[in-house]
Length: 108
Image (cartoon, rainbow, N blue to C red; front, side, top):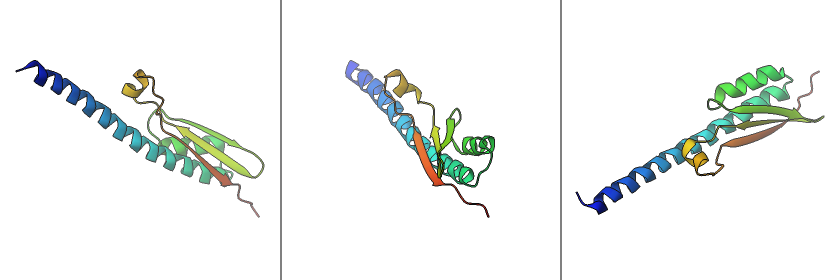
């Protein structure tokens, strides 16, 4: 085995690791988007905040942080997934974050 082949295999393994991590981060983006939408729909119906957070965390990746805020006419649900290890170690903040806004529903 030559040194060039050994070096090429190491570079290939690193690129494969970064590619798979990027794909997983992309899937995290999809999951946090759905989680924030679910939470915003529930919050718009005036569900308890604990129920909104629990429902959003069920949809989000493990370890995600959910926050619910709102003003008079709308609610905002923000979901942030944890960072993926290789990117976090490189100092790149590529954690998936989604924010959904929904108008509060009026109850008769």
